[in-house]
Image 1 (tube, rainbow, N blue to C red):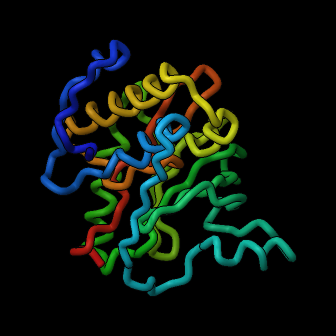
Image 2 (image 1 turned 60 degrees about the vertical axis):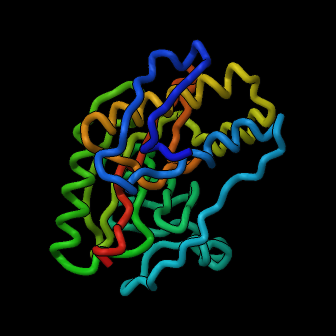
Length: 232
């Protein structure tokens, strides 16, 4: 199902999650990849993939294609005042990096779209949507540390600290119990429901957009950072 659908839960862990609709029809992100990954140990279901083709970018941007070449020389790539250390994950619409912020000397998670906004109007539209998501405060939404633009590439940064992405968590916990899986899914749904009630959709929910801390709390990052087809 999609994250803009009404949610009905039978698990007691999910009873606190309100049903919520996405603010605009068709703008929600499929949540099935998340659920598929969590139930895979029992169902054997494969992780869903999105094969949408995107228009080529007009400027160069950090990509994972150059990782092997970079590893032979300088493995760290600069993106403004950020050192991009490792690609945490990507979809056909967005990509997320583990980065070091040289201004505050802290580890961050930097997310950006994989295509640039077509012009200044489209860029301002993107910035407005990102700011709308950044203003939300909820236990299951990752606080935004910075929103910016570098070489016409917009980006959103959240604190990373000692948290893991859900992809990394599943590597360390390949066989989560049903209670653990339900807890993670319900926390994600709680964050999405709150965002939807505030008029914000995610549009590209992926395993690397969910941070799991040492206490097991789940936080969603990268709200509404997809560049829509009308903006390309």
